[in-house]
Length: 520
Image 1 (tube, one colour):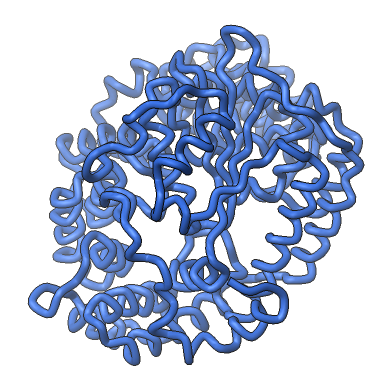
Image 2 (cartoon, helix red, strand yellow):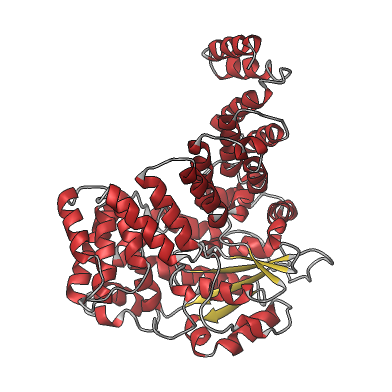
């Protein structure tokens, strides 16, 4: 950067200390400077976000994305801001810039790889992370990131090698230890129980990693058939994880009530526009079979697997011009009552159809989209919504024994889990009444017992012809960016039916709540 530009930037920084209005004037004054326009727009977008102006912030970063830039750090910052604002395609274009590809600093590639991993582009992430390693970066966290990406890409043996390398350098990095527990079924001859217990003893119950140790020990001891010891660790893990979270059940109740009060009436299904791919939303509780159905459908030659997308809620926030997190809340839902539904549908399609890769349909498989299924039906008449259900106890238990990253905070206490499940079923019943014929329910038990008949139902609902490929032969391959990545690679089986029963006595608090409202 030229000395003149450096001095101009310093003057703007000094002026910005006078408050938001002064900062805006200072950075707007730099937009005519070619070397400074991109960083100035990034600062202006941050000012917009600080004032709650989501649309203006998005416009600033999109304008910045059209500018050239030779500084890798600024390109990475721009990409991150684009991703944060839901402009995923533009963010990916940033990361493809030659200035990043040519960078000799391994940290540049590691940062890009971690960004891509956060967005579930694990195949692209793996290329960047392994390149960082080839350039000489050696650190346990990089080995862990590579192991994580390899796991989601289906390279389980190489993933295990990377995770073990991480633990050799940092034996108490329990995120890696927990992943190792999930890679395969543990046996008496091959398990990590002693290592996990030793690590937990060194770190102590108050450590942030303690829940990871308990969940890993539950999984391994459950594999080994020691259900009493396994349950003790699951109970401790749930309690420790719940203490780390700020779950507000009353806020969730308010969200569900607001969703049921949305004024949108019945919107009949419409055929896809000629030449335009149409989305298929697969929704439901996590661990209810959504990934299994997604993998079956994605094997159809006319269907692309887009993964778990945040785009619908992100574009809902843009239409409401309301800042917030990646999950819907009551304030957003109340604001949604006044939005332009056609605009919401158009923006969703503009931000996702590139993922169809030229095919007729693409799957948006974010389980939590069940919350906004009514808005999806109202805004996207051409969309198809497939709703996976599973027996209540199996569904709730599978959530209890999963340790989620930043979602589903209700899943760490039996009573909270059961009450959330009942709210979810009531909301979906409400949507089915409001939008008859728009939502197809598929039961997990029927899918694993008679996969062909259920696959035919779903394909017919989606307007697609039969293809034998959806049943497949043997295990699934390829990238699977969800918590079920290991299990879904197995051939279709019934082994997970009734998986809660070995813990029936310990699960009585949850079952008592579920049994008062519905039976299996």
